[in-house]
Image (cartoon, rainbow, N blue to C red):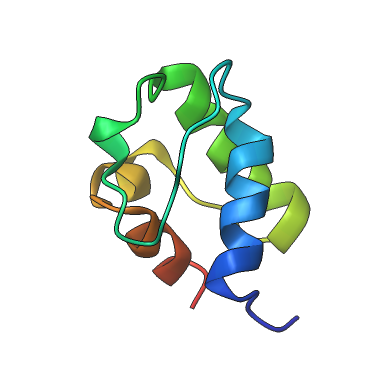
Length: 76
């Protein structure tokens, strides 16, 4: 499977975390700056990696990520 572009990844990310409010997300967006970035959003990202990309990641993997681009790099 080829790694999705960062734009495709952001689309998947926004679907996975399902924020109640519309938020602008770029590769440089800091995860902690997102208004609804919490354990439920993180779980959504873990499930997204598994279902959409066939890659298993853990909460510890997420803790190493500061930005959306860092998350995208986990696919590499």
